Image (tube, rainbow, N blue to C red; front, side, top):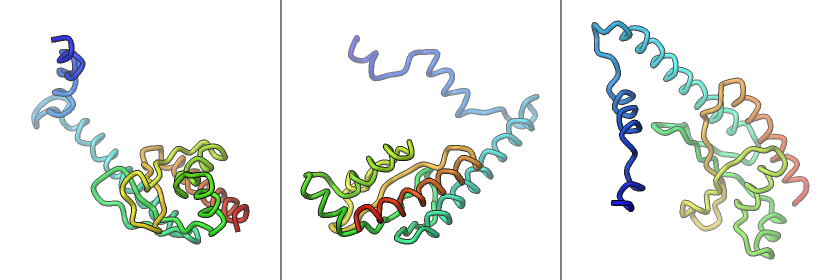
Length: 155
């Protein structure tokens, strides 16, 4: 029983999940407000996906497919030869080197694509677009600046 209790949420957690999944029904007092809020959140997520996808595609050396269905995007990143060599000499994946550099220099945390079975010679990362629209614009600008500095350092 003790092990099982760590695998399942407690009763309050289950109740809250049920409330979130089963929103108000048409005719309920809060239905209209709920639908408006849900629609606004969805539209904002679509805008954020476009901000990050379009923004990454404007960074030289980045390629990002349009985001569809998830709250993540996976840009491919062309790595300078010096970064690839440095990473190999230090026994780490080049995109891990990039992700750590991004975190240390900007505070932006991403997941290296090598953790997802990236094709040999392909590099990139996974990131979310859950921060606000204003913050996503700042994130894209910070990633651009970091990428320029990273390429300059390892070229």
